[in-house]
Amino acid sequence: MESVHGHEVLKMMLGSETAWTAATLVAAIKEKFGEQTRYHTCSARGLDAEALVAFLAQKGKFIDEGQGFTTSPDKICQH
Image (cartoon, rainbow, N blue to C red; front, side, top):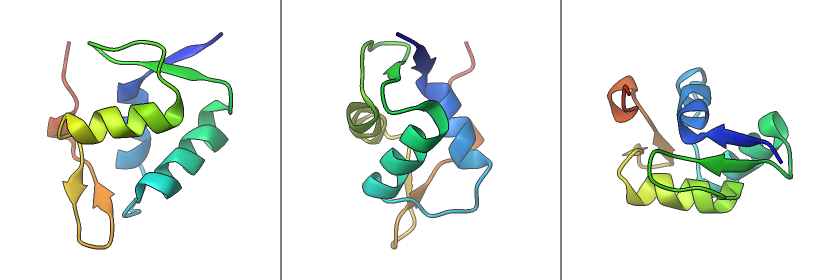
């Protein structure tokens, strides 16, 4: 099964001017990467889209915009 790094999701968010909600981000992730895709980060593996969004939120990767959230390049680690 394919595993995509969470950085790819953050990059996808950067390419959009959307203020996301957890639900809209999960839907976009599944549309772009596939329903069955799993995700990994620098410290977690085997995440589904919902778990990845929760993990990224818990790690402070999102910026609250009031009606949703975005991210910024400085939220993506560079290693």
